[in-house]
Amino acid sequence: MGVISTSQFKKGIYILFQNEPHMVVDISFVSPGKGSAFYRTKLKNLYTGRVIEYTYKSGEKVEEVLVETHEAEYSYFDGSNYVFIEPRSFEQYMVSVEIIGDDKVYLKEGLLYRIKFYEENPVGIGLPKTIAYKVTEAENSVKGDTATNATKQAILDTGLKVQVPLFIKTGEEILVSTETGAYLSRKN
Image: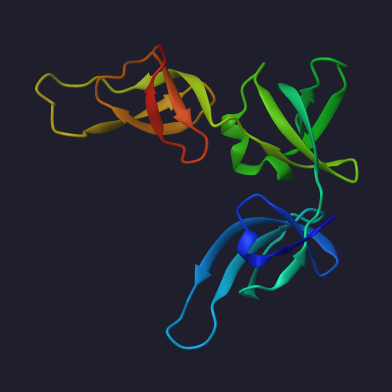
């Protein structure tokens, strides 16, 4: 574990806060007209999953927590855990619903994900930047509907709902950003 400054904070890093490991889920830098600058953070406790807000003074030192990462393929959901399998050793990792949270719509069988461990317990997953999905439901566009940047809602094979251009049809494959949840392009 190393000591880092608040200026090195970014989303997704792990730090020690009140003697427990936390992940930085959100951060904003505030520089008021009077007084010193500070960082407003949202921290997620790796043990309880509780998210709290905390303000750090600019330049404050914090202990960084080292988190181990394993690559594994998503296999299936057993009712309470998402099961990932490491492709070389076939070791199974059970990741709870609480840890996956809203990212469940980005899980596709056979895709590789980075599972993060702290003290040999799964504490989070890293998603690929983009994922290809099949459009299972999309409204038909009406001829003459050509307004600039016009979009419609589409439902993808994992249940994810995204806004797509009017020319996207049911059955097509599209690329979606896991960072923003937005449509990127058709898959070639």
